[in-house]
Amino acid sequence: LSVTFLFLLIFLALSGVFIGILYRRNLFMPIFSNPMFVVLLVFIISFAIASLLAFYVDRKILSPVEKLSEASKKVAKGDFSVRLPVDRTSEETFTTFSNFNEMVEGLSAIETLRDDFVANVSHEFKTPLAAIEGYAALLQEETLSEKDRREYASKILFNTRRLSDLTSNILMLSKLENRKTPPEKTPFRLDEQLREAILMLEPKWSAKNVNFDLENLPEITYNGAEPLLLQVWTNIIGNAVKFVSEGGNISVSAEETLNFVTVKITDDGIGMSEETKYRIFDKFYQGDTSHRSGGNGLGLTLCLTIVTLCGGSIAVDSKEKQGSTFTVKLPK
Image (tube, one colour):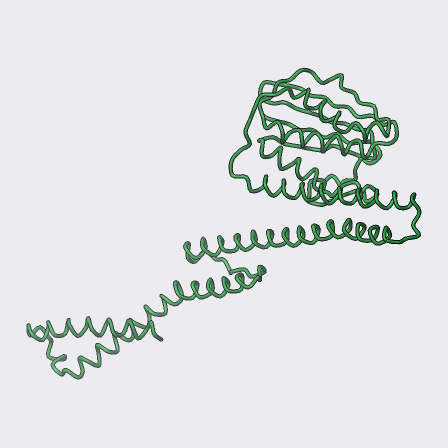
């Protein structure tokens, strides 16, 4: 109504000016000699034209804007299920509504990931904290034997390290995901770095008598993010050690071509199911719950983030009870 009234005033004003000019120049036909008739006719015509224009503006401009405004209010309140109807009657409306729907879908996905992340972080923190609290309470008992006291202190230390590792991984993952510039590159011996990662894990693999095959590890000088890539090899080889049996075998090989360096880490451990392979790089996902206490489900997520940041790719090939092979491909 307000739009119609506005258009009506505009047309009446323009018509009044036009009629005034015609009267002053005596250009009216005899049928329009009656001023009241002219005013009534102008009013009817102006009202009709104003109504048609107002209907068009409301249909094509104001109505889509109102729909967009109402939908935006719902999204602002946290309702990411709202969608706007999309049709091609107006190219501008089609583009605007399509972009809005894509934005809401993206926000919905981010919200879901955030909720899952918060829930998983809370759970991962809660478990070791509960263990620390329980063993600390047991340590206060005066009748506790020295053997039990050492055992409980060892459990507290183990869970404290779990918390420390979890915090470090979360901070590193957040830092990498929010990184605006590519990592600094320096030339280094990639084969020596792989051997360094194996040596760092020596207490774990020596306790299980794991055998390493490094025959296909030639001398390779690579220009890349040295400290970040060390984190990748440590995580992947550490996982291999975790999932091989006593006296198991792990093979580490590398190949250099004109444009890429490819590293493969193969173990003869328990392998993975198809579901585990599909979700292995998800945050906090751990396919084998029997080894849950030995990790926090962020190691391979970190690997994927680092390798992607370096412009490379990471893939896994595995079958249950037949071992796994992780392949990291890095651009030169």
